[in-house]
Length: 385
Length: 187
Ligand code: SF4
Ligand code: SF4
Image: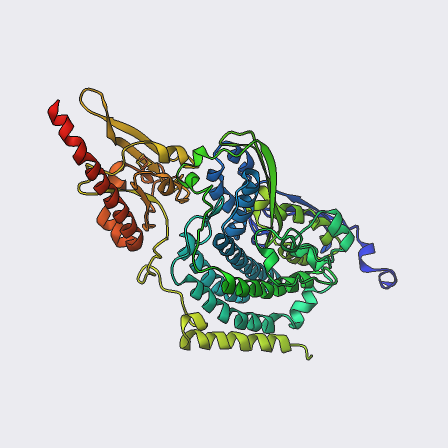
C-alpha cells in the first residue's frame, strides 16, 4: 500500500508501448492512408505514414499520351480542386510552348481558381471539425455552400468535380450567359454564411481547447521541410506564389496574405478562414474588371483543340506552378519535340506537407493526431498520384 | 466566458438553420435538396456524362465516318472502331463496329472536342447501373446511336449552333458542286 502512494502508478506495472495501425480504411485518415503508430498509453511516440494505396502512375501515363490528353488526368490529382490543377498544368505547357493567354480567359481562370480555393477551404474546415468530434453538422453547412459553387462549375465546365476546363492558351468554352451574375449572387450570400460559421467556431471554447497549442509547427521546420500553402503561412511565413510569381494576372489584384503566429491547428484553421475572405476580395475585383467579350483561347493554340496530336512544343523544359489551395502545385514538363512529353513531373503539395506529420504528432494524444492530420489538408489522390 | 457557452451558441446556430431550412429560399439558407428518384433536378446544358453518337435521319446512317480520330485521342483508349466495307471489300465511310467501354470512359469530353464531323456528343444520361460489369457497360453502336432530335432536346443551344454550322457547310458544298457539274456532262 505504502509503495503505491509513493511512486506514480505506472511504475508499478511493466508497461509496454503499443503498436497500432490506423487506416487504410479508417474514416479519420481522409482516404486510403495508413498511419503506423506506436503509443505509450495514449501518447504517440512514433508515427510512420504509409501511403501508395491510391498510386495510379500518373506521371508515366502522362508521358505516354499527348499533352492535351493529360488535362483530364490532372483533375484526378486533387479531386477537390480540379480547376487549380488544370491551371498549373496549363501554365507549365504554355511556358514550354510560349503561348500567350487572352485577357478574358485569364480573368475566367482566376475567378475559377479562387472559387476552387473557397470550395477547398470550406470543406477542409468541415472535415477538420468532423475529426474533432463535431460530427457532420458543420460539415453539412460547409457542403451546403460548396454545393452552390459546384453547381456553377457544372454549368461552366459540364462536371462538378472533374472539370477538365482549361486548355493551353485559354479555356475550353466561354462562360454561359448570366453566369457572372450568378457568381455575384453567390458572393453576396457567402460572407453571411462565413460570419455564421465563424460565430459557431472561431471563439468556441471546445474548438479552442482542442486546437490551440496542438501540433505546433515551428518556422524552422516548416521551411526546412519545404512546406507551402496555408500550412506554411499558419507558421508565420507569408509566402504565397500568387504574390511571389504574380502568375497569370494576380499582379492586378489587391489582396492580403494572411499569416498565423503560432503554427498550431487553430492557426491553420483561422488562416484558411481569412484566405476565403481574401478570395472573395479577388473575386469581387475580377468580376468588376473582366472584359465582357473577347477571345477565350489564344489564336496560336486554338487549332490544337481539334487536333491535339499536332501540338508539338519545341524542345525544352518548363516548370509552371500555382498557389493551389493546398500549397505550391508545380508541373515540370520536358519536351523532345514530339507530341508526348518526354518527362512529366508533379510537385504535389499534399505529399510534401505530409512529411512533417510525425514531428507534429509526437507527444500528443492519439485523438489529437487525427486532428493534426486533418489540419494538414491532404488529398490522397495527390499524395499518391 | 462561461464554460458551455460555446455549446449553447452552437445549438442556437443549428436551431436557426433548422428553422431557415423550411422558411427561406434555397439560396438564402433554405432547403435545396430534392428527394432523388421521385424528384429530379434539371440537368445543366453543359453537363456531360457519357458519349453517344448522333444520326440525322435513320440510325443506319450515322454522322460518324469511322475516321478513328476520337479513338486515338481518347485518353484511356476506351473506344474501338472498325470501318465498314461494302461487298467487294472497299472501305465505306461508316463504322461497322463502334464500341465504347463505359466502365473505362472517364467523362472527359475529349472525343466530342476532337471529332471533326460533329458525330459524337456527351449525353446527360447517368442511370446506367447494371448487375454485371463486363457486358452491360460495353456499349455497342446500336446502344450509342441517338437522333439529332434528342440532342436538340438535351442541349438546345449547342445543337442550334452545330446545326447552323452544318447547314452552312452543306450549302457551300452544294454551291461548289453546281458549277463543277456541267464539265462532267461534256466528257
Ligand atoms: S465519332 Fe467522329 S472522330 Fe470518332 S470516328 Fe466517328 S467521325 Fe471520327
Ligand atoms: S469522354 Fe473521354 S474517356 Fe470517354 S470516350 Fe470520350 S474521350 Fe474517351
